[in-house]
Length: 145
Image 1 (tube, helix red, strand yellow):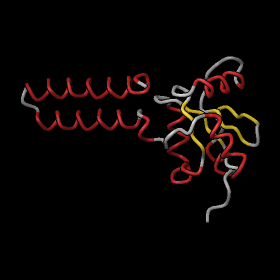
Image 2 (cartoon, rainbow, N blue to C red; image 1 turned 180 degrees about the horizontal axis):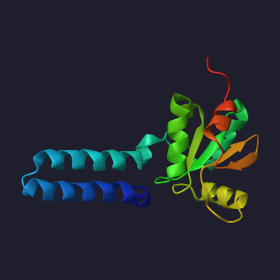
Image 3 (cartoon, helix red, strand yellow; image 1 turned 135 degrees about the vertical axis):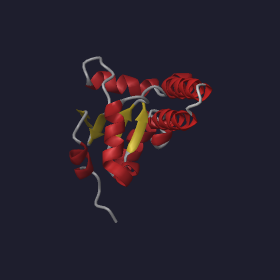
Image 4 (cartoon, rainbow, N blue to C red; image 1 turned 120 degrees about the horizontal axis):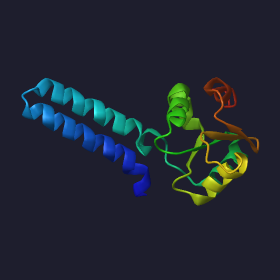
């Protein structure tokens, strides 16, 4: 569990150190900006931006029932964040599985990507698609109600 928080905590601590240094020299405005910037980066690279992970088996079961794609991702992945942001509110319709918190999910991704844990890997109708275009993924979702 600590692995997923390493990067966000490092960013937060680095930002606090930089802000402390700036505040010590009297640049209070810059210190606040640095702290806010690094806190924002920490949140963007944390699991907080993504829906909770149901696990690979449960996500595949849900996908079989509702036909929605399964997205395998990991914290700190810029391509996963890009997909999440570009899908906007519709991203909540996908089944997101964190490969760092589920060894079975990591095995699924390695099987689909020649032994590599390349994410995002999106599974639609049982077929994996590695780092697909967000527009294509949006097209795989059921029509908005």
